[in-house]
Each structure stands twice: as structure tokens, then as C-alpha cells.
Image (tube, rainbow, N blue to C red):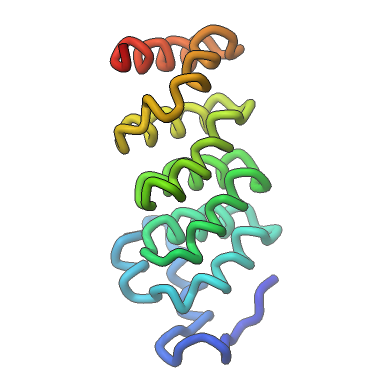
Length: 162
């Protein structure tokens, strides 16, 4: 588990306050991102990698809303190493990144075996108008993914590309 205080981060960052925020049932992620900011990213990275899945998921979503390059690496890590819900948060968070970072995250997410992760990756790729970037992967999903709903969604994306 992460340390309870953060001395290396900016003074306006309080780890206990961040934990209390993340433990709420309904979170206002944009407001949390504004309040805690990039100073919280190292602590959020620890939470994403931690053993508390609920905190990992919420931390990954919050990272997606914090506009800082360090968040890109955290989301890329979450896209490949987290539980399925954490990988979903990474795929969703890709929408909030620049094109290069989103491409790295979504490339991992579109190769995932979990239907929900792939669904969010497809939606993020579409939201960012990156369908052509992932045309080969989306085509493969539309033809060979095990989940028929995901195959259908990928096929619909392919129809929009052509």
C-alpha cells in the first residue's frame, strides 16, 4: 500500500485527502483532477499497481483526467498489467490523452482478450477519430474476436472507415 503522506510532491497534495476522495461512491473525476493535479500522479501510480482493486480502478480513471505526460506512462502500464476493470479505465482514459499516447494505450487495449476492454478501446478510438490508425487491429477483431457483440461493434467501425 502507498505511503500515507507525500513529502516529495507539491505541498497542496494530501495523500489522505486523495484516498478519502477515491473511497467515495460517486466521484467527480474532472474536479478531482483539478484539485489533486499532477503532484498526485506518483501516488496514483502506486494505487493503480496496488492490491485494492476498487482503489486501482478509481485511481486509473483519475489519472486519465490529469493532463500531464507522466499520466501517459501510468495508463500504458494499466492497459497491460491491471485487472480487466483497470484496463477498461486505461482504455477510457486514452480519450483524454494526446494522439501519440492514446495510440500506445489503445494499441495494447485493442489486443486485449477481455470483451469489455476491447469495447472501450473501440469506443475511445472512434471518439478520437483514430479508426484508420487501428484499421488492421479493428479488422482482425471484426473477423475473429470470440465475443459476437464486439465483432459486430468492430464491423460497424470498419464500415465507417471505408
